[in-house]
Image 1 (tube, helix red, strand yellow):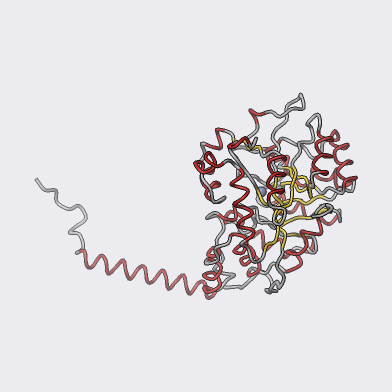
Image 2 (cartoon, rainbow, N blue to C red; image 1 turned 90 degrees about the vertical axis):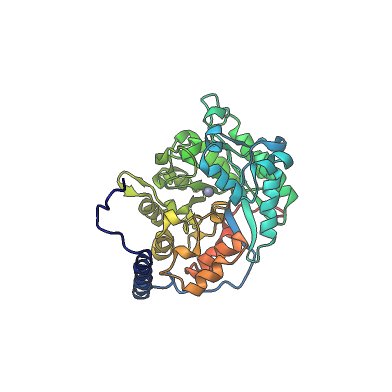
Length: 380
Ligand SMILES: [Zn+2]
C-alpha cells in the first residue's frame, strides 16, 4: 500500500528547479558582490620581471629504484594516495618508470625546464635517509631516498638546466668524505629535511660537518616548519631556533618555506624565524610552496615583514607546484578574473608558478637572488 507523504505533497519538479535556479543566481550574485567589496589586489604593487634565466632553488627528484637508480620510496608512502599524485605531477607513472628506469623522471624535469620561458635552471635535490647508531643508512626508517649519484647523473645529462643539490646525513660515519665528494661533483648546496631524516641541527656533534661546509662555501638549505608530504614527521626538529648553532658558526643557511605552518613552544615557526633573521645576516629564506592552498597568507607575510626584506629567494617546490594544491583561482581577492584565467592557461609548471607569484607582487629581486646564494662551482 502506498505511504502518505509525511511533509505534505512534494513540490512539482518545475517549481523545484525554479527555486534552485533562483538560489544559485542569488549566491553567485552575493559572491560577486562580496568579492567586489573585499577585493584588495596583489600583496605588493606588481613589478614585472623582464629577464629570464631565473634559478629555482627547490626542485625535487624521486624514483622507485627502476633501472638500478638506487632511489627508494617506502611501501607505506607507495601505498598512500599521495604517491600517485606526486608521480602524475612529475609527468610520469609507475609503469613508465618500471619500463624506462627512474632516469626518465629527471629527463622530464629537464625537458619542462627547457620549455620554460622564465626559469633557466633548477637545483635538483637529492634526499638522504635516516641513519642508525652505526652511522649507516637505516633503510627501515627511510621513507624516501634519492642518492646523490642519481642526481649527479641527471645533472651530467642536462648541465644546461640542472644544478646539483646534495643531501648528506651528517651522522653518517663517512659524512665528511661524502661532503668533499659532493663538492668535487659540483654540489651548489646541501639539503636536509630534519624532521624526516632525523637530524637535530642544534646537535654539537655536527660541528665538524658545519665547519667543513663553511670551508667549502657550501650553503645549507633546510626545511623549516611543519612537513606534511610524508606519512610521518618529527616537526620539533624543523624549529628554526635549532639553526642557531650553524648560524653562529657563520654558515650560510637558507630556511625553506619561511618556516610556514608549524609552531614550537607555543610560537609560530614563522615568527621564530623572523627573530633569527633579525639576528643573523647569514640566514636567508625562500618562497617555495607558499602559494599552496594550505599556506594561504604566508606569501603576504613573506612580502610584508621587514625582517624578510632582501633575504628571500625563489623556489618552486616542484613537483608540488604542479598539483591541485596550487591554482591562481585560490586568489580571487588578489587577482582579477582575467589574470586568474591567463595564469591558469599557462601550460608550463614553472612559467605558471612565476606568473602567479609575479602577479601576487613578488618583486624581481627575489627571483634574481637565488643564483647569488649558491656555492660557486667552476664551469657552472
Ligand atoms: Zn620541498
